[in-house]
Image (cartoon, helix red, strand yellow):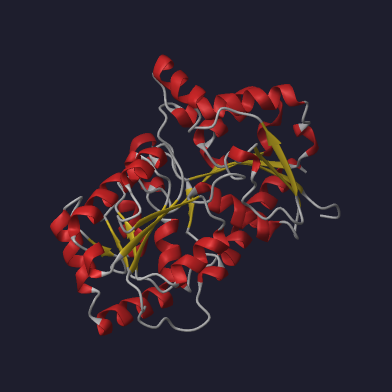
Length: 367
């Protein structure tokens, strides 16, 4: 191709959140920007702070009702629908009013299924340009409206489910980890027993359970500390519950480099989730040379195997046993080394090349 391919990535929350889908978009952006003429379409982030590195490509932002906004919560209750759907509807309403010309892009990619459906419905003349790089599909009738050949899944859990439920074959891509999460040298046994949670502060991640577990475990009296990184609907209640003497710090939203720095000094990554599309937080923890304790979800075990340690679901005794076991230095060092070696096989550079081939194939179809 003589002219550089013009690519648009649509991800409403990427400018304000890092984690899960937003990490996928931010990592791909950094690796695609030198190969294509890249534009990222996102939303005005809470507080106006953009948390991604936008050097080398165009970032466009629109106002919208984010999933954690008060207006979104009210509408979600009135309409009895998810905040994610309201978020997408609000974002695409702003897009229609913005005057942004989507016809100037050769390929347009989405990363949420609600975004994929709205793009398909509202811009029918451009459908041959669409690619949908999704964590999975849950909406009934999705594949009646969006061709399966235009969809790629990140992670390995969604494709078997789509085949079983809807009889469609969908390509899958693995996870990836940013090089900055790898330590400069093999990890030494930490001097401080600092536990870390990274993720969205909502019910599905059970961060409220984690804070309560830590408070009642006696770990703080043994010198342990818990750092909670992230934002979401539970932030205010956690802030009220976690006083200065609790041993818990709420660090809010952080850039990826800040998260990496915290993980490099940590003792364990704790991730008591019920919902995990990519498992990126778990992979990033392993890349930092951290032992990880989580729940045995299919979406995690299918790629991570035996590398995390799996505590019984929300069982305080089981979680405490797994944590205390790592006080044995040799055990901690062996798990750290195994996790680090495993994570080195999963890099974003390799995955970005696969994504670029997928986008170029779409452009070739158009040409």
